[in-house]
Structure formats: structure tokens, C-alpha cells
Image 1 (cartoon, one colour):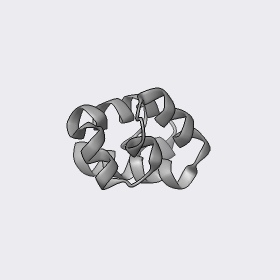
Image 2 (cartoon, rainbow, N blue to C red):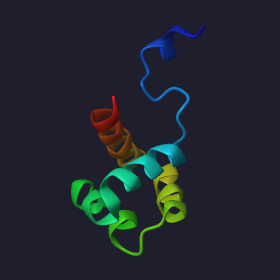
Image 3 (cartoon, rainbow, N blue to C red):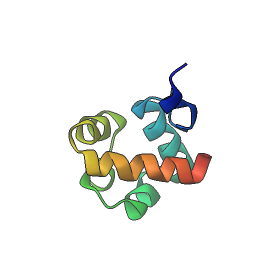
Length: 72
């Protein structure tokens, strides 16, 4: 077993699962207010959000941190 993954709350969870859970929990409007990025505020979709978050490490970190805060 990989020791680095033992304490990783995101181990085994895809970015798509994270975005879907946050969208279901908050909705796009509230999610866009919590994390002010255009992919949540202007014509949001899971597909466009994933495309942006995969290319933008700082935004992905904010999304992952919010997921950990809410669901862990």
C-alpha cells in the first residue's frame, strides 16, 4: 500500500465526482459564489468545469479543498 495515499481524503475520487457532488450540494449559483471562477458563473456545466479545472491548478485546489471541507 502506498503510504502517501493513506491520509489522502481524495484518494479514489475523480475530479468529475467532486464537481458533481458540489453541484448537487450547492447548485451552480451558490458554488459560483463560494468559488468565484467563470466556469461556475457563466454558462456552467460539468464538462466546461472539468476542462478548466484540469488546466488550472489553483482553481482545482480550491474545488478540492471545498469538497474536503464539506464531505470529510
